[in-house]
Image 1 (cartoon, rainbow, N blue to C red):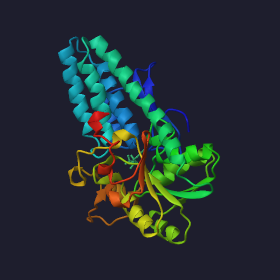
Image 2 (cartoon, protein in one colour):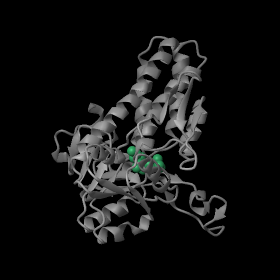
Image 3 (cartoon, rainbow, N blue to C red):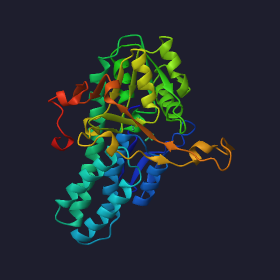
Image 4 (tube, protein in one colour):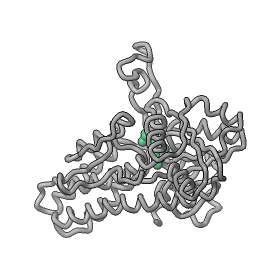
Length: 346
Ligand code: MRU
């Protein structure tokens, strides 16, 4: 997949994004012409995946400026800051959402008047998307070298083109390895309860002609034990000084990979690092009971039983072989890596 998954639509003055909740049955773009619509699209996971959320956040600020009726800079900035808080509150775990919002908001603060704010925020938000696309290619190239020819890679959730501007992080590594002529096949964990693996990863890889098989999340350990997995590659929502936060279930795969001596790679843009935070500082998004209790209209749990639906989990650094970024491949522990400054230094 090389088409953009989320972008500014000039004709309708709105954000256009692939509605990922409809996949794989329907591939359809939807338009968000208000910040409230975008916030709802993020909450519902119509747009999802850490880098795509960064782009969405940036475009959200540009949208806030575009629809603002304020005639003075102060009034417009007040509205932008209010919308920034609304958007940030939609999903707390991925660092990229707040990062994209703050980056674009900062450019607005340096402007002289509302017209300039509209122009500059849109330019900056589009730059976030363009840079993400370029970073994913670099991540892909850096990671492709780590994969042997004729290998089988296990991945969890969707860290593909759909989760980014295009190409993907974990799936970007796989795409780049294939492009370099390596034979790579993929085991995609279905990723309960929202099935990003079976719905999205399988969709985009099969569309690209990359061999992919879907498994239940719980059969990953057995496949590793049988020697059928050569490497695990996942994306990340936030990387603290001691852990990688990614879709719930990632930790389980990392423990199993360590046990079976299988390399466990994380592929993520450098901006995913949040080294001033530790595992305990990160809020893990707790999602609704309904996601576990129903499959469409079918009830999967008795009435009255509660659910504990954590969307992400932290994987400690000692289980991670390396983090693949656009700036290179970093091996934990990171405090020994002088080339890894705090995110503020970027
Ligand atoms: O809840 P989601 O679907 O937004 O979770 C996405 C993930 O956990 C991805 O692996 C992560 O954001 C990296 S995407 C390149």
